[in-house]
Length: 67
Image (cartoon, rainbow, N blue to C red; front, side):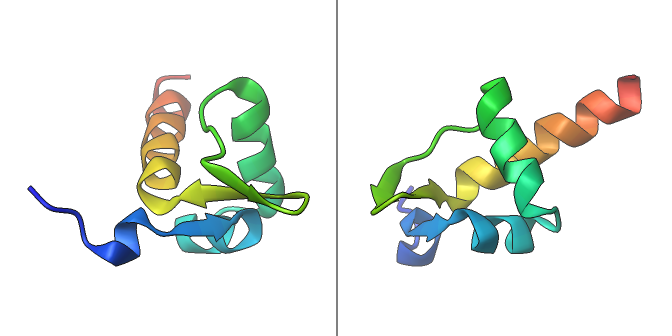
């Protein structure tokens, strides 16, 4: 299965947060907790794969339902 170029593109944290419907601080917290890893860097900015962000979001939502 081939992934589309849009899904494999790297995006900065604030855009990743917008796409996932969370605050940028949430993206940073997911990184701190080990739920999300940056796939690259542009200067000081961390870059993420959108599919990784969505996977972290699914895990976070699943955990919040069971808590």
